[in-house]
Image 1 (cartoon, rainbow, N blue to C red):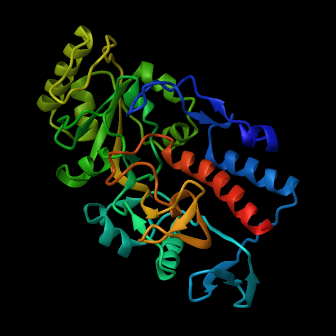
Image 2 (image 1 turned 135 degrees about the horizontal axis):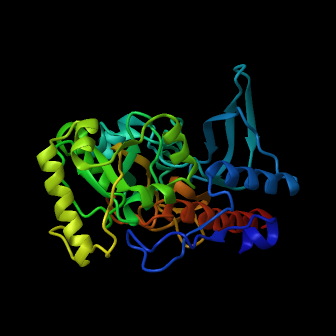
Length: 357
């Protein structure tokens, strides 16, 4: 509401998203275009309209602070190696998490140390390292958003609606291995643990037509990532899985969908059987962003291990501890952007009040 009313950045309720993966109601919002690039453009425009300076190509290398942890300024380096120091009354750390730092991932999330990272490689955990150096507490450092839906080898995310609308996921042997709808984040580790570490999303023409409205899906279509066949034996040959096993898997699913039954993994199928032609997309598991980080209070103020507050240090987004608890399975779709927007608002309000004092 604040972004819409004060800055003209409007988020719409996505009525096309069925409640799934822990959501019991339709509550996901997005900008009209449904892409991160368009959302970023709107945010940048909002800053420019308010006269807020954004310095690009300015890499912060150091923080200046007093012995008690009060931050006095930052040092940044330009591409030409020139150095600039900037003083500050308050500092908000918002450098996202540490998904691009393979060493930190290995230390805090060892089960995903070999997983692909689908994010911005410079997310090296700088804010977390700086905060710890100043005496800040961290928590839930093994928390992350994973996904078993990264197109392989294209490296493009596949929309979960392919599964929500009735698609299934199989491993390289042609077998289902989980409830595809109960843990969207934990599915990444499940898939990586399967033989050869990849699998396939199987769906039909009806779901294909729904997915054509997604820009990423259109790109995958243009790249030839979509495999299609009129019947099961042909699809098995195209994707290189055992024909008998794939037929058995799909026959079981069709029976469940026809009756609206519940499978051995606890997935409840509605009465919409998959019908030919059938489609397949090869996918693997990945880390999308980490969710552990600096412990903060209700004003986004960074906390010490003893529960006291840092003097003028705030954190938001992936730099701060998220709302998902430990591990991957507490993640809800939208939690990352929820933390970014909400903690950005709280940190800005709190840092502004402190600066005016």
